[in-house]
Image 1 (cartoon, rainbow, N blue to C red):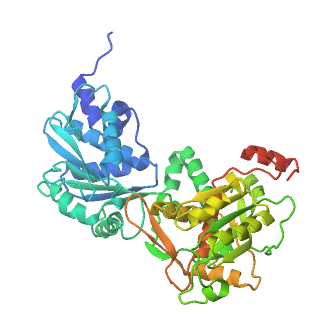
Image 2 (image 1 turned 90 degrees about the vertical axis):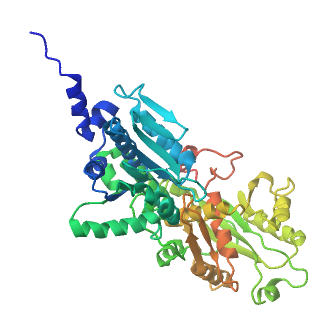
Image 3 (image 1 turned 45 degrees about the vertical axis):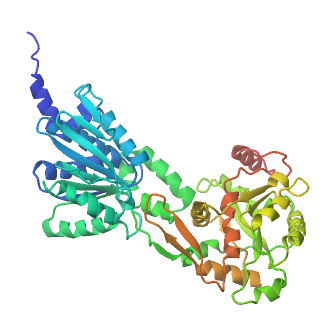
Length: 503
């Protein structure tokens, strides 16, 4: 007896009756359970015209964009005869919206839709009469006139300007009271996404309908063990309380401004080792240098006593401890401050001699030096073949993103317990360092760059010591060799030599 063949209309209806089936059998990439939960809630609102708003807040790289693309593909299939529009917004057109558009096209490249999909004007995708429109939410973009009759979406909502959204995008859903979906990752409490989540949580309490879907890294790891291993490595690399780890994986908001080094971080920075005056045999030393201007009339204590005090040139000597590279939880060097040099006002031609002698005394392997502005000439002298040559690594504080990145990178070293200041030796150097650390403030911007302004704002205190210390983050980017090696060797070779007792 011949096997009965199901009518194609039945098959199509079956596939389109549930996004779980559509995801698995049409697209070929089944959504996971934590992805299906918000997808079902959003579809219920769209198909029953409830006009609800949702926040889908996943940990970084957990698949929120896949949820969005599959929802778009599913709705285009459902509405291809009836017609209508989905509007998708993001902070930038390139690369964010282009990536979203490519992801949707990939979802529609299946046996059911292939050959029926068409693009228009470079920013629209159509399936039959239904279309998805991709519009930039950059404050300078012109987006007036679009209508989100099916659904209005906002990707990376934590980086979107709130005024831009309210003026240009919110009205797009008004005529049909379309469902609105905000995707993103936690940042500060001042972002549009954070405000929307707080409002939606209040709405949840009033009617019991879930609107906010928080999925942290541990929830993802329950279904995707490989993802869990990746995040664990990131936590070990940056530290549990690093702002990027807290926000992107644990979904914990950070303050938009405040003390950069709170009591917990200061405790991590305090070492138990003594300050040194001489290098120890076989130890590896490196230096960082923050360069200040010179003064024609006053120098030293006299200049530091002026109000406000003049900025000083500060060199910090670190012992680079490679043994922590063998620790699987760190897998990176540690840096112990063993001495500090400070000079105020000396002409750079004379300062060069002091610094050269100081660095030679400590037999430094690397010197990260501030080559911005007034420091350029001095660093050029130190980089000469007659001095330290390629051992000098110039660092520019401009554009502003460079200092922002340095701040984030320094927090990584601090949060993993790999920066240690020598214990109290009763010196002004020690007291001034901790004063500057305590007075250091930060302010993070909203927007995709996650830029951080940081430093000591009190002109009477300055931040020369903390800046010099922070430059250790540039040392942390290097591959380190053992003493006596003429070339840089790989970390695995370092560990082999440690195992063999050569270190």
